Length: 104
Image 1 (cartoon, one colour):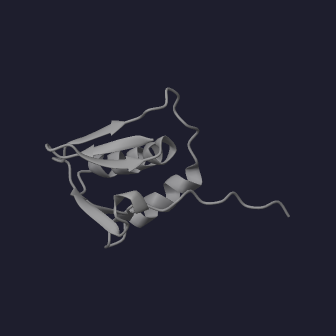
Image 2: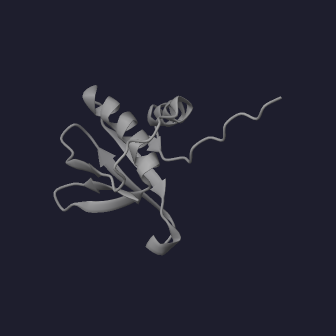
């Protein structure tokens, strides 16, 4: 289980390492372009369920903390889905990894 630490207070936002790696790619791409955006996700039941959102911009303090020692294989389709959501007016909305297409 990885953690995205946000802001000077170090607010901890848990994601599994695989999801966090994909989010890091999308988030850093937007911040490199100096784009601010909202990032939202559904909270785990242990965190009270519901939804949460934060504002991210190039001045945001972020720390991506991984608990696994190996970087995961990146799913380009998932990156595309997350990047597309980040470009809509509601901002980046976390979505689970898409299922691979089934064989015909």
